[in-house]
Structures are given as C-alpha cells and as structure tokens.
Length: 279
Image (cartoon, rainbow, N blue to C red; front, side, top):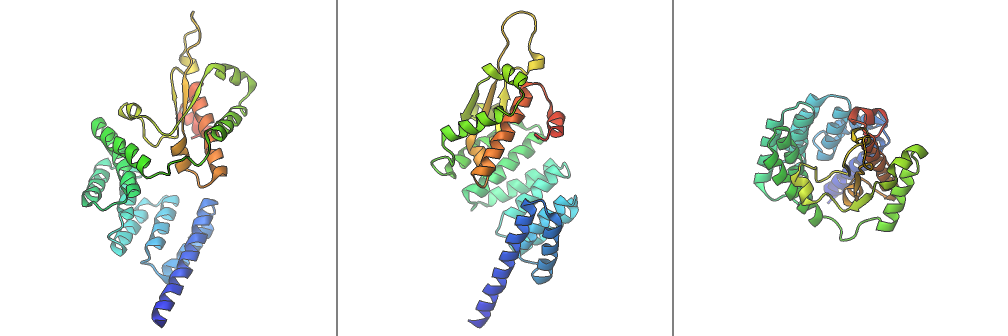
C-alpha cells in the first residue's frame, strides 16, 4: 500500500508539472515549458504525457527528427495509444512531405480498430489530408465524409454559443473593417452552419474548415455592365467551437475567421493573409 501511495504521489507531481508546462506552451513561453520538460525527462522519461510534451516542444524547436524519435519512445511506452502513431504520421506529412508514409501509418492504426470516436475522426481527418496530398481525391473525400459523421456523433447536442450570440460576435468582427470595405460587403451574406455540408466535402472542402468564402472575389468581378456579383461567407460554428476552450477564445476565433474570409472576398491570397496575421 505504501508503494502504491508513493506511485500515485509521484504521478500526481508529474501531472501537475505537465499542466504547468502546457499552460506555458499556450502562453508561448516555450523556454519555461522546455525547462519543465528537462526536469520531467530526468524524473520519468518513459511517461507518455512527458513524451507527448517532448514531441510538441521538439516540433516548436524545428526538430522533426527529434519529434519522430520521441513518438517512437512514446509508442513503445504505451503501444495501445494511437496518439503517437497519428502524431508521427502528421510529422511525416507536414514536416517531411512524405504522404505515402503517413498514409501507411494511418491505415495501419485504423485497421487495428478499438479507437474512440474522437481518435478515429482525428486519424481519418489526417488520412484524408494525406490522400489529398497524393491526389487521391476520391479516397480523401471518403475519409472526410466519415470525419463529418464522426465529428457530429461525438459532439454535444447543443452548440456552446447560442446562434444569436454567435451572430453578434461575427457582426462585431465586421465592424472592425474600414468603412469603405464595409460598403463593398453590404450585400455579402454571412451564413452560419454547424459544419461543411456533404456536397462541400465531395467538392474537396476540409470537413473541419472554420470558414469558407464562395463566389467571385472583388478583383475578379467584371466592371463592364451588370450588378456586382456577391459571394457568400460561411462560418462553421461546431468547427470553431472545436478550436476553442471557452467563449472568449471562441469569440476570437470567430473574429479572425470572419476577417480571414472577408480578406478572401477582396482577393487576398494566403501569403497576404499571413502578412496580415489572418492565416
């Protein structure tokens, strides 16, 4: 009993340190998080939570090789957890551009079965991205349609923010735009939906997209005759809520997404958006 109490106390200390480290990561204080990680690796280098943190910090330090090695140790420490395999697949896809390797890892983990709804959805979402990278549009659509259904099944029945409150936050974001731009947007509707439709996903839209502008951007509209062609800005509330821990963060995500999609309406590309801080 004494050994068990000691083990629980040690794990409690590790968990508390991990909470502190992740809070530092959220605050972009990576130096503090790295110091905590160093102490934890001395204490228990095989703890899955410690290895998860190591993966995050190695990626933040632009060390994908070290992150992959940490994923391997994480998988050895907890072979029943799909998270290190999915993390490795994401590293292969995003950092090494190796979509083939990512597809293999993800198909292997999905073939094992026994995943929770959230775990399966995450794995299939990444698999869809990897298949899309390999120009397998049909395969990507198949996986992303599954993600659409799994995400809906794994979420609460009611959204976190009421539709009325959600629309007010979106309207407030629009009011941040200069008056001249607001005049252009006067006839552009903003449609709030839970998530992209199946038809959108079949057209290649990411099922976890936060927002979408559809229609003609201002620079592409004809200046010769006829009324201006309005586009539509879609906001996907459930996906926005997925990215937010509380209402304050959700309001910020809505603001950024509205401004991001509005920028698309005015013809800005992704490089422009990154420069404006709206990527």
